[in-house]
Length: 310
Image (tube, rainbow, N blue to C red):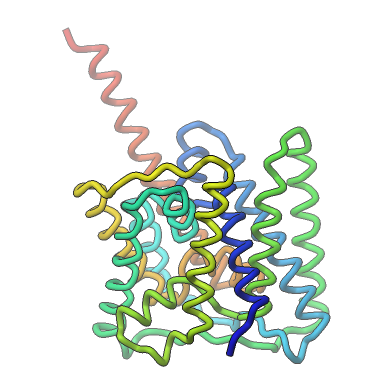
């Protein structure tokens, strides 16, 4: 089925993602290393905007608009979140960050896509009996829906007040709002589904609409990057490409175990008021934070050792 609106929305989403970093890796690194929480605020703004759009859409048309279904907090989910964090650290970017860097011309991240597909394929082959099924649900009460809408609205207003002197709040809000519209139109969609289906040679799992929407997402990122003067082609380098491949592989396995990558967690599962989405994303952030904190401690110890050296 051809859906021009979905293709337009994913084009706009890609354009917005190329203009603002919603990368969890960069956000945590700035917070831990530089004590600068601005990037984490951008993540909160984006998920708040997505939440308001999703929940408002669900309230407007509750019989047609599906929200993410609840999943239990299990060992595979926790393991998947840890793998998402480890893979993003190795890759140098999460799912959304990979769109940003690839859209800006860093061709090393093509290997991230290969890794995502390979990881999803490995998880499907090795762990098929244990993999949870991702599903959507309409079963959410009006009270919970509007309470969530109010919570996200208050959070967004508070963050905007804190960042009133800065102009960068518009892009994360726009990216989150457009993502909310994308998921309202096509619940559970993600560009990695296409990579997964191609890697698994499962053409039934990737419709032409999903394929075109994924291409539209990256096209929007590239067009926006060229338009804003950010495009700079970086050809793959063996060591960096290998890191991207390995990081993508870990993220692909992790996304299968949860299920869902960091893009779906931030812009669909959390805005859809699921506990598993919040827990998985926080575990991923904690994995990154502990890694960066350990690296910072090692750097400080090395500096002290150099000062004490004769």
